[in-house]
Image (tube, rainbow, N blue to C red; front, side, top):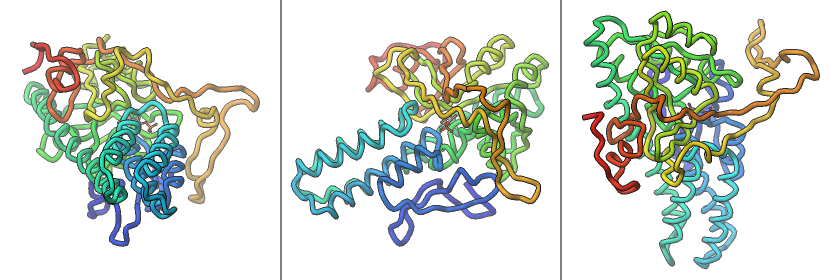
Length: 378
Ligand code: MRU
């Protein structure tokens, strides 16, 4: 993704071996790059949401494990079993930061498993190489998601012959991954291919990732868009102003139930009621093949302060947090909800598009699920 003409990933190791991330807490008002020096700093960056989005927290955790390996080695731990135990412990602490997105535990478990599999070799070198591999795979998967999703948009555009209006919720763009994004990758691909697209951006209360991150990304890429209040989507769909919905996902079960940002479910209900296609875009690292359905997905509940306050710029340009609502009224703040598979038109993955069914998912990922024939997508 280019920012003011310069290509960035959301996370990288610089020439001085320092781990760099874009501080998403400062966007859209300031573009700030931060160095994360230790695994503890990585943990805080994930839990404070300086980095966020399923793919990016997975990649960040991958790099966090590299820093953990450096710290364990620097503490003089050389014996394999002791190293592996300390490494596993660091991973377990990283996993506790944010429970819903599968990508985080996926990346940590991959590090633990692969680093434990080498004996008497430089484990920290392996952890670093694996962190880079996880990040590269994330970017490549998202690029492919963009290519597959482009074909859906192209088909709609050919039928309609006019601008395709796409509604998205939260931020599943390149800021939520290492590059490209999931839900927004097809949008960027379509825009770059000269297909006229316009995006309805849900503001996404309480943290406003749509307003502050998705709108900023789309503006950087020159994609036409409007920010809408979270509750506007149903009205727009009923008025025929939405051609398709694309969202990201934080965890998808083997039957195709999708956990995503709170409010996704309501958009899916409105889409189903108005026959608007509802697609979910995700890399395979977001699948949780161990879960039969969405009932067992852990749903993160965050501080009520996110509901009771809002942050913006004051008239003199200073970032300011103000209280909303009456003092003393309590709030609850669930960060995600589950959209049942039956409301989802298709899953756009790096290997292609499938129905949100066990059969459809098994067709794309037979190594994880027993294959079965899915007739609904070519
Ligand atoms: O709480 P966040 O900002 O990490 O949540 C992000 C979302 O819900 C995205 O839509 C999701 O991660 C899917 S795309 C990575």
